[in-house]
Length: 269
Ligand code: NI
Image (cartoon, rainbow, N blue to C red; front, top):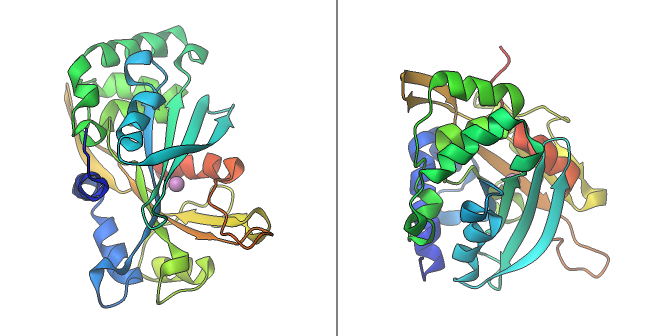
């Protein structure tokens, strides 16, 4: 496991950029003259609740570099469970890790996922690069489509595996923007498509968090029977509000996160 928080995030970011070319352009659009002035509010990772690779196995990589467990979230319709983690340095991204509750899915999905996970080397899970190691298996386009029909989340994992599902710009710290509506307008003016599930803006000042996101880029995946272009990763934008005690809210809003998951849905043209 990495021992330096910046090294881990640099690797996650580079790996994310390889399949999310729009992220670099959005970085340029929202940042000021210096490229490094964007602070990430959080990143998100996905997995399955199978012991070998469960949420806690991913979390161990963050606990090892000073993160603490903070909140938990349930997404019943999508059959997901999630926790979020925070670092003592508030400029480090929060980490949102979700897992698919495999036993609640169909026997067919369970068999496919069990077979995928069985192909992961036990030692790979604690290796430095596990969180950006991609897939440890190769499924067919037919299997991908079968998973997609039941769980977009499972299908995304079958194609992309372990990597940051999204990075999130912290709007509070941007020099050029002070609200989410202007960020969304700038993105649309530049030709980026936003996730409109549940509205362009998820959440509100009343729940202390507003979020929006692009629709995932499309990128070619090499399946066992050929290449196919599918949604990869997306960029999210978050603005946080102070609690009654004056401290900025650092948690997540399940109803909003539920809609953000849909940013990797196939585009409806
Ligand atoms: Ni997010």
